[in-house]
Image (tube, rainbow, N blue to C red; front, side, top):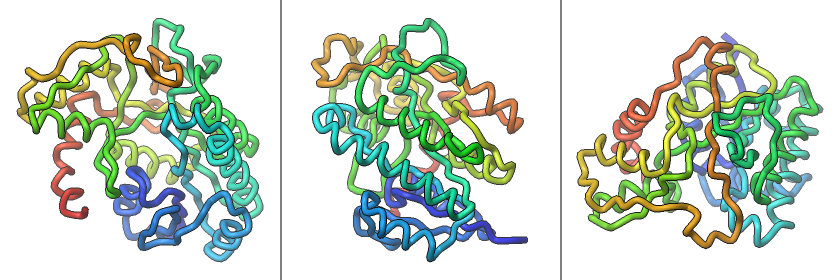
Length: 295
């Protein structure tokens, strides 16, 4: 069997690191990150550097996970957000086409304004409320210029290899330490555990999936419901979880109240059942020891 060469940008990040560890032996994994790690340390905004790297490795697939994801920081520093989320993606799309590689671009549910009273499908119009969502949507368009590429809109959670704390980790740490947290009851999304997301990516590679797909969890929930389910899975007290509204928060950038993704298209295309809230959190719990030992 031919070994598939997969190159991962942001390989030291939450998703990138998981991917680097999860692919089986018939995949040849390489990648880069701006932070020091066992792979290449590259600034992806340096076109010459990434071009040299990719032409040396000649990957079959490039999975682009690297991004500027802090919503408020994107709003405050739009030139950097554009350079990272749009410029790098444009460069990778060009290089992938020159190499005959397939680019898999990891996008976001933040491309929607949340005005619909249902989950968003791939055919719904985008209308991002902030620069993060706007720049990610532009990255999608550059990726889809090549019909052989793949865009996956998602909202993942998991354990970090780097010294960072994701939303789910923050909730877990807060409940473990008995700290009070305010969780939004009026902001809805479709969280998917990174390990479940990886399985979809691998299958998408095997089946040469192309185009635009939503890839959220099997259930939609509020941030409050997510925190309550996490406390249940980990057998932690939920007494410190308080109900709150995102409207009371003074965010620098505007947020969408509804980021629910309808993932029926990819479920049908790949013939898969994406785990729901408790199923994903169960996998999140099972993997905790692996990542705490790794860090």
